[in-house]
Image 1 (cartoon, one colour):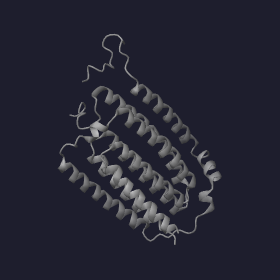
Image 2: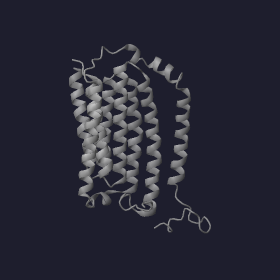
Image 3: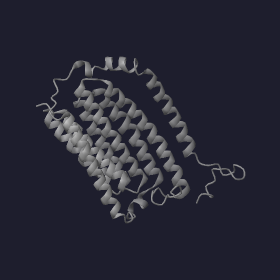
Image 4: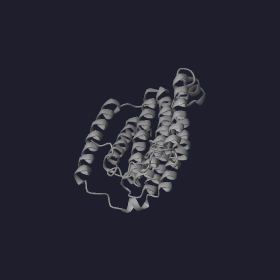
Length: 181
Length: 101
């Protein structure tokens, strides 16, 4: 049963990840990322992290991917996507080789570290949300607060960066759109 | 039958390699960003896998923080792309070479 679910969602994740990387249209890439993230969320639940799995679907596919889609639609990239990507066959070959070499190293390292390891039945303590929360707000409270501050800073930074520069902001403001063409 | 955790870890390595290849080959800024999200996600899978293997909850907690940092990174990065598109009318990263040597 677990093997069947693992096989289905692992294959789904792999295929949709390939579509994310290979598809020319950014909208379809983004929608394919939803499938990848959902499949990974199911794998999280299989690995005994149901809270993380649900959070993955909520935060990633619910918020981050919607942000991506919003920006893709806002920027109207269809014309850009249709234009053929210029040359760079050598770059593709070397990037593929580099990724394959990296894959070989990491896969061999992970396999040698954990290859024969058998896991017992899922410990209830690992799945329990209450003890998860106690540990999160116990030893990791400071990290949690710092992450909250990081999110606040990120929201402010996103607002400042994406803000439309004011046209009549005096002479020679440093947010002059014409000067950087 | 129970699936060995090492299968999950190898799957995560494959996903990471796909993301790496995408981030290195694509020109469209949005697609590069999606590839980076793919890599972050595969690392999350590795963390949860090791958390299962070692029966330790720390991996799951780190995944929570990685999710938050990924959200912050996506917000700032997409805002940068909006600003870039407003200035240059493109997010083709080959044509954005202002800061190249």
